[in-house]
Image 1 (spheres, helix red, strand yellow):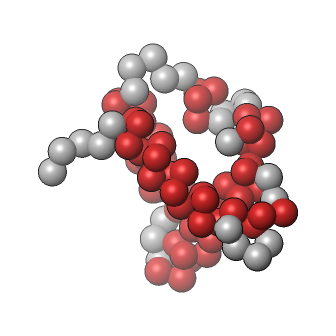
Image 2 (cartoon, one colour):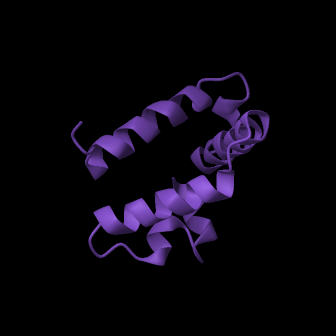
Length: 87
């Protein structure tokens, strides 16, 4: 299976977040608010299915760093809380 590029990954994330924006409450939230809702739902899913959210997030960060030349901590939202609102 071919590795997904960053453009493809961003498009997939946009598609999922668009679904949150189309929900009854989602159209009233900012894109950052919909992102928080998605993350909250993923936390619930991890609890319900006994998957480790933090472990998965750490693995995803490591994969992002390995696949994204020059990616810094700010690109992942570390230290850039305001960045999520513009998402």
